[in-house]
Length: 112
Image (cartoon, rainbow, N blue to C red; front, side):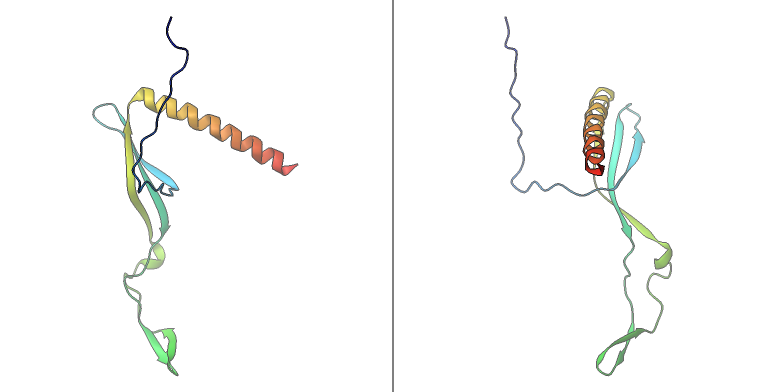
């Protein structure tokens, strides 16, 4: 009879550093795999701003910000992504669902 347990060892580089994400974009590729591109969404940053000098200190902004549409823009910075098959996607979906349920339980207990 075979063993009833198996040990899984995790291997990762010394510079392993998880990234923060607050969204994802993707879909199904021509091979029938699921592609997920994770992004971090934030407001756009100006390329430049010009300020006046008032009594030796930075004063008010005196010219338009570059780019002009800065106030109507945001950035979705895609730094990584994953490609997975159907079975892996289902397993990750199940795994995430379990953790979401645990967070909901913790949240409900903290409200009491």
